Length: 495
Image 1 (cartoon, rainbow, N blue to C red):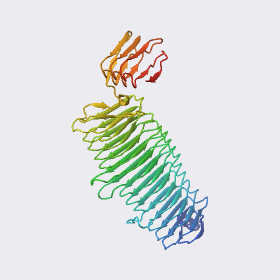
Image 2 (image 1 turned 90 degrees about the vertical axis):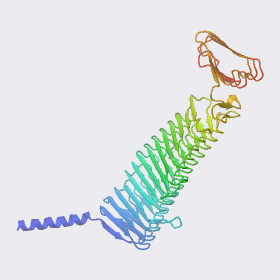
Image 3 (image 1 turned 60 degrees about the vertical axis):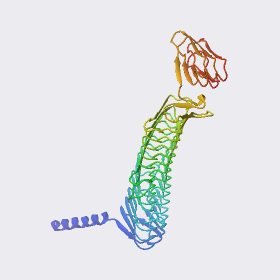
Image 4 (image 1 turned 90 degrees about the horizontal axis):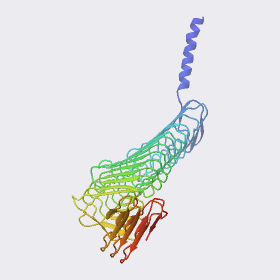
């Protein structure tokens, strides 16, 4: 009776296939070794210490693993060794559920949720001190809320895509995320009261863009990225930082954030929106190859910021449009620097340090309302004194013209002719730029007291051209710099 046997055989095969397709479930296995020998396995740990101290292993046939830890301390100190699998889902949903657990899943797509809603800083969270090693993961999605990822460590160094969401009070406090050598994008979002407090992200030699969003308001709290550190040395890509402090004053979205970008190949952009949004931010750009842009929009948005860009191969632009938005910043400019201070006291008591070889320096201080740059200081590096703006913000005053990066005036010689510049009266050419680069010869007569002090003199560029400086007054040539960019062999020196 072949016609009757065949349908029965097909039913049996279908039932067998369905059975094999269902994941094998291990429940509350306790301490010791458990091995998954099927394509899919699920570990359910819902009793108190139900899987505490367990060691889970997979075989070459295993592709998918799911771990549910819903009992108190249910998966503490457990270890998963699953470097061969393709997909890993881990859910830790109660106090200390995955405390000090270790996960080794080098090649798996990782979906990790540390979700114990309402947990406080006084209680060890669901993933407290969890360690995850998934260095070759195609994608890692991590969710942490309410102090549940404190002191976690993630090794995702060669991942292709990482998304990290920290939501709620202290969600990822002191977490460490390593994505060195990653080729792909890292997206980090920190929402709420100290959600990424003291966390560190190591993205050196990463190839891809780093996008960071730190948000605070009256509902979710303040200091979202308080003392968060970003190490992006040698990163090839751009870093975009959004610090959004809305509603109630004092939310400090990126309070005391630090960015270290030595030899980075790309741009850094920081949007500091709202009251004290980037309070005391540090950008240490080192020798990065790219531009740095800061938009400090809000009262005290970049208050006490430290911006070190003097050695970058690129430009710095800093936009300070609101009252006290860049109050008391410390800004070290590269050779191309654009600083806009557009509101009352927006750049009050700012220190602007300019490299002596600057090319472009644009400092805009609004005249209305007044005091936009009151008590700000502007100085070329290495000088002994500083340049400040006068009381009504309408002109620059230099206590020592050798420190002035701006020219007090310009004298330009006619091209192709001998040139004589007379500075007879006291301080007549003080801080001037005297350009004789296209003349056939140049003579500068500095007769009065401080008549040429701090001036910059460009000698004729042509070979064998004379460049003569006569100094006959008190301090008449103090701090004069003489240079030539041509073939006459003068080079550059400062008197």
